[in-house]
Image 1 (cartoon, helix red, strand yellow):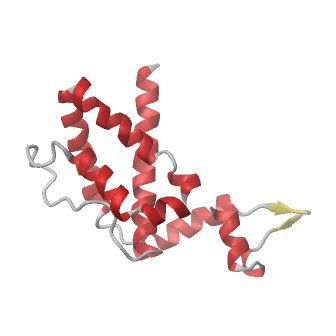
Image 2 (cartoon, rainbow, N blue to C red):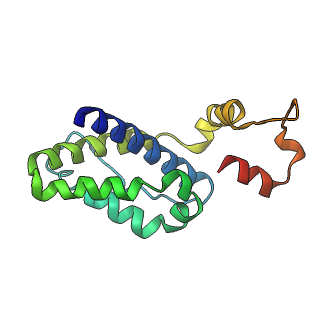
Amino acid sequence: MRIYTADIMAYLLALQLLFLHIVSRRVYNKVVLPEVQNPLSPDEYGDFIDKLYNSIITSGKDVLSDYHKILGSILHMLEILRALKTLEPNSYIRISQVLAKYVYTFYPLRPEHVKEELFGRIYQFGYRQKLGKTWAPSSQSPRQLRYWLV
């Protein structure tokens, strides 16, 4: 059961980090995730979970407050991983290095590169059936569209 929980947590954390990266660059025009120069140097990123947590707390407050429904659990998951520092130091270092590699792969993903795929998924999953007709966001105001998508 612990393996399934860890798999689900890793999947959710990776998706939330990717979403945080894209939204912070596209909507807020700033970088929230810490920069990773070389993910293959293990000594440099042994404490990456703390760097990631502090970076999200300091520069990502507005993103977290606006998209709380999607990013609400990211800080809780990082706090759980930070607790491993005292309980399992070797696991903490390995997970920090893996997270550094994930963040390193997110940096080349600019929002303009993900635009078509992201909006394609919003089109597939975000539209609602309404009275037998397909709900069209073009007929809605931006405030209503944001309500449906967030």
